Amino acid sequence: MQLFLIRHPRPLLAAGVCYGQLDVEAEDPQPIAGRLRPLLPADTPVIASPLRRTRCLAEALHPRARCDRRLLEIDFGDWEGQPWDQIDRRLLDAWAADVLHFAPPGGESAATLQTRVVDCVRSLRGDRVALVTHAGAIRALLGYWLQLPIGDWSQLPLAFGSITLLEIDATGEDQPRQRQGQPGTPGVLRYLNR
Image (cartoon, rainbow, N blue to C red):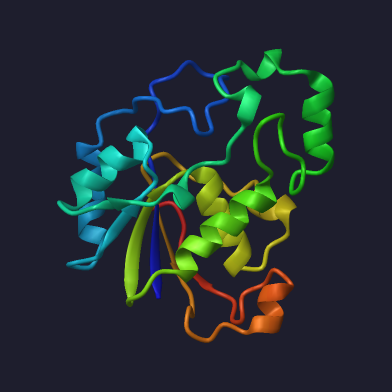
């Protein structure tokens, strides 16, 4: 299956604010959709996170785009909408010490994010799909199918309005490997950040 992983346009938000699942406006999706549309094969289904910044781009790409809550960005809980420099330093240090499993107060961990986005992709059928989502969700999918450690996948550079192509074998899943948190067959990264 071809996964066209598309990051939303730049949010219209002050720099330095934590905005995981905060539903904020973003830059005009039309120019991005015009640039990305030729990169998508005809009739590619489009599924998006339900947040405005992703949904608006998905609707600009496809007249029948649909939403799936499993594609939401990580939930930062009590940190949502707060300037990063005003978040308790001890909590940020705890997060840095265990990026995969630490959950902000009222939020979720990167491991939880990865589980839900992988579950979403495993539920898909067909040869290809475009997912309009967030940097965290895209990184989590790439980390899972490319079998990268959290220290690598959490730092992957993803530009606003970019498209990344990952090819996976969604049919040959190996149950013992899945229980170990790995795909049956590793994916192939065709390109990043077009």
